[in-house]
Length: 277
Image (cartoon, rainbow, N blue to C red; front, side, top):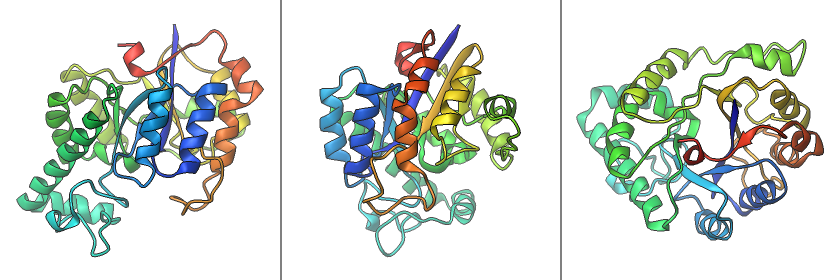
């Protein structure tokens, strides 16, 4: 049986993102959204989610390049002087391994974000992380331990089979996510041992920011059996400070409401992770 979770990341980043999430859920194939609890548009996102009870909402943990939930002064090893979390992921990963204080700050920030999500009153559908930073073994351990206390039942594991992409776009030479593949495999094992629901595959890595209407329709047409997560970054425009230069935000929104996508999704069981647990 083909089961599909279509997720929008960065819910709460801006009004433009939130508008696209609402539109894509009401009029398109979007079934879930991942909330950045401390982003500028988080309150607006929560208000929209409360008006959309069929939209499944999860936690998009932010541990790099954005706004922490705790005061930056409490995160000296994780935050920059401007108050945002560090962007140097490789160096930060090493610091987490070398510095017990950094690991304590990490755990405190993760717990604060889970607590902020719980304060919204929204059911927790799933958990993932900005830039897939939860594949880092130390971060994964903290997420698994802390998430258990907050009822986490599903976790994204970013593994994308390239053969599906080739069938969806003949002639494509998609970039493999080899840099995180070993860590994603380890995360899958740990998540299953923890009794969490994980997708059999995750679509959106190679074409992150470029999940255009033809690509989304092609992926849906060649979807294998099992549980698939397809994640996207929709927005109604780029009126906000773009989180990633070159991302085709409006095209990703269009892909979620395109007639070809709606037609290709017919016959596929769609929902949030909680609908398939």
